[in-house]
Length: 77
Image (tube, rainbow, N blue to C red):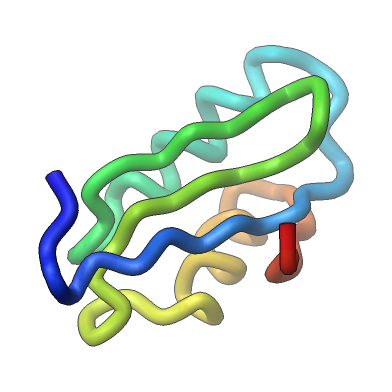
């Protein structure tokens, strides 16, 4: 799955309160070009994305989460 250009980005999300929110975020972020996988961790409000950073930037990921109706920001852990 991982290639030399694959980046692992972790975002912290805010504003989701139910498991169905997870599917909305995964669907929206997963539509972006260059995204290989998206996993939303409901309990910890973490979004883990494997993506090609030359195609999809962290700002693109944050914007996709916002388009789904939630707030996200990059996380160091």
